[in-house]
Image (cartoon, protein in one colour):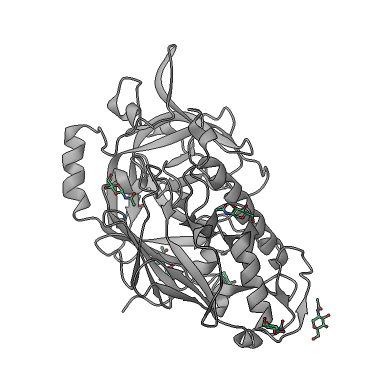
Length: 441
Ligand SMILES: *[C@@H]1O[C@H](CO)[C@@H](O)[C@H](O)[C@H]1NC(C)=O
Ligand SMILES: *[C@@H]1O[C@H](CO)[C@@H](O)[C@H](O)[C@H]1NC(C)=O
Ligand SMILES: *[C@@H]1O[C@H](CO)[C@@H](O)[C@H](O)[C@H]1NC(C)=O
Ligand SMILES: *[C@@H]1O[C@H](CO)[C@@H](O)[C@H](O)[C@H]1NC(C)=O
Ligand SMILES: *[C@@H]1O[C@H](CO)[C@@H](O)[C@H](O)[C@H]1NC(C)=O
Ligand SMILES: *[C@@H]1O[C@H](CO)[C@@H](O)[C@H](O)[C@H]1NC(C)=O
Ligand SMILES: *[C@@H]1O[C@H](CO)[C@@H](O)[C@H](O)[C@H]1NC(C)=O
């Protein structure tokens, strides 16, 4: 990776950003794709379809993240942009160009680049909104090969016959986005005051050749990378802090607040973001153990730690629905929860989860409490029943955590009703359980 941690932007822009970032303070909204308010909402999908899609999302997302952290990604045509560009996740809307047109992207804490589909399309997948047309925008600029911005990306390709900095991001399943690395005006609206934050010269990928695997599905126009690498949304606007609070999935019409800058709420228990030796694409956390009803599972200490070869570890992610735990821990968890639950256990009729009960939602109170113990003092996160269980779509309640033989992820199902703060300078993630449908006191 050639990209250093500082952005070689031009000085004028740097100064405007410094004065800007000290005052940036806005609340956006994250809308889940299963909400009727989401541009990705599919009214025809049955509950069982949504659960199934979420399981598929979690497992394929895990594969991409595993792939993008593996040594093979060193090939310059591939970058850690691990979400295949479709379907499930939390979208955030914004305006782009002059005149401004509305668009949105999936908010992704495990990727760097902001990108969206652009006209003309060599190949574009279906999206509901009109595809962004840079020719109609007076603030659009393509980055040239000699421009310093071109050096910020480790995946740019400069052809001798085309003096434009190109990008190409690939996914393990051969979905991809490629196009011109560009800069544009972007506008983010504050949900409380409806004040606009206008960000000039934001760098992004203008994708002219985009392949989605799930043709015909509703696809988001693009992504908003929220990791801490130099081209991410955070780094570009020089912000160190953001926080979000995900409303429960069954509050279908709810929107989840996401705060950037001053109003970011870094409160509650704090756990360090781990430095895993140069790879800063993901937010790695120290998960030190899991308890079932005050009894710590005998999980081997290295189950969630990153190995010397980069394998393993535990990350928090905004793009994975159900948490995925290394099978060593997952098997112990299932066994212990089953042992402490005296409800009628049945096999999952949809064959997606390993522990299911035929019971009412009230009876879930009879299941044992599960606590995740993170590195740090008092960072013991008690999972609510909502975060632990999910209706499998056919009336059974199943433990909403999936097994893997690789690294582990804390998914969004386990993040509901918790204020989660990220301070990338102090290198901490904070957790504070709360009712995300209510504004913070
Ligand atoms: C914010 O910007 C959008 C897009 O230009 C515009 O439609 C909206 O009216 C603006 N809001 C305010 C409060 O200026
Ligand atoms: C702003 O947030 C409130 C409360 O979370 C929500 O009801 C409203 O729909 C949001 N507005 C937008 C434009 O997202
Ligand atoms: C969500 O909003 C839609 C459209 O406004 C409405 O038809 C539906 O009843 C609402 N659902 C809930 C659970 O409030
Ligand atoms: C995860 O589980 C598999 C099989 O259970 C094991 O081989 C592997 O080493 C475990 N740990 C990590 C960090 O991947
Ligand atoms: C739970 O575990 C204990 C101790 O290992 C065992 O004696 C008991 O039979 C188990 N109960 C169930 C319901 O599996
Ligand atoms: C769950 O229990 C109900 C009755 O309480 C029964 O009708 C239904 O068949 C059961 N479902 C499964 C999958 O066992
Ligand atoms: C984020 O980037 C800043 C600036 O490069 C660096 O000081 C900090 O350690 C990074 N934080 C994380 C969590 O990687």
